[in-house]
Amino acid sequence: MTGLKRFVDKRFKDFGVNKKREITRLVYEISKRDKISYKTVLDHIKSGTPYFAVKDELLRRRFPLSSVAGEPLCPHFPGLKINPKEAVKINPGKNPRLNPRYVYIEEDVRNSCLAQRARGIFPAATFKNIVSLKDYIGKRPGFTISDYNRRRDNIFITSEKYDFFKRCPCTKAALGCGYHILNLGFGCVFECTYCYLQEYTNCPGIILPSNVEDFFDKFGVYKRRGMRIGTGEFTDSLAMDHVTQYSMEIVEFFKKNQDVTFEFKTKSNNIKNLLKSRHAGNIVVSWSLNPERLVRENEFYSVSLEERLNAASECVRAGYKVGFHFDPIIYGKNWETGYKGLVNSVFDKVPYKSIAWISLGTFRFNPYLKTIIENRFPENKILDEELLIGFDGKLRYPARLRFFIYENILEWITKRAKGLYVYLCMEDAEMNKLLNFKKLVK
Image 1 (cartoon, one colour):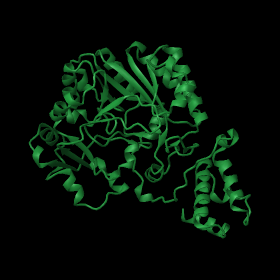
Image 2: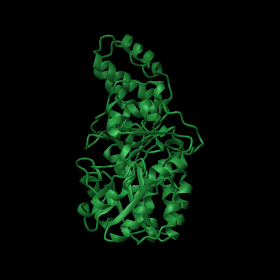
Image 3: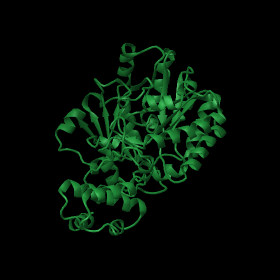
Image 4: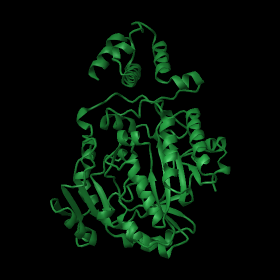
């Protein structure tokens, strides 16, 4: 990156600092996407060309679809800061078992069932008592991306005292789906390139509350009749269920709350506890899905698409309703072949009458996550497409492209299962209106 910055400085010596930053960013992204050198990108642009002429030319190359469509371009130009030491070290083809180096236990839960279970499951780990997670964090300097990369080394067993439930943090100006979160745990053992949890680089490890009974005690006050609630927003609902055994307690508790639907959301096939639990029919087990190529390239350490669908099929045989989240939908070369195949794979494997819902959501993220993704996954391809500031301040595909994506996937779904409950995740009213969702969503 140093060479690129020096090259831009020399080529456009009369440009100011901010203008050079924008040109450098555009050249870098074009060079990375097209797999050409940065010098080649600027070959035909002469030294002395006015700034706006240079920028306009590079914008047309970086965002060709939006430029042709005449859509307003609202790109994001963060400074180019890539540190190779912050890259995640991935072992391709391997799905390593979680094997933490340290398990930190808050004082008041050191004798809890979860703490005792962890000692048996992780005999090689060093167990340390701490006053509290808040005290532990407060005594240390700010955590970095490199610390976040090592979060699988650290498990914190805690007692949650305040943050039991919340409404889904739906993006501003989007139509909400009315989802609620049972905030049981924080942090994920998987490494997905697009994960928004990367924004929380101040998280020192995987946080597991041990006081599930307190969540249940508080639920009576929080409960709304007919609500949909789940645990899959800030952690994977089932990836660590062999350790936490949350699922068995949750299934048992919601037998007493049959006017509420509870959702487990996962990228794992860790369903053994669910299969031996007797449920009351108000539990939905759902999977985040992408075509297998995108799983291999972006959802490291998670299980394959086939394994997810096999797990869904087992849950259906056990009487559970299942759900699927095509989210994030990632646009790129041959995307239609991949997602049409994904839709058909779902309905080939799972009877559509056993599907509670399918959600659709295209790739979007807060702008400051862009630099984190670049540093953690320097070989990523997901940032190569046209991502512009959208209606909610997040980076998104342009509206016309999102509409095209949704329209096609909805057509493929309705060919296999008319009347299925399908909804858009974090989209504005205009997109829902354009797709005439009233006919599709109950």
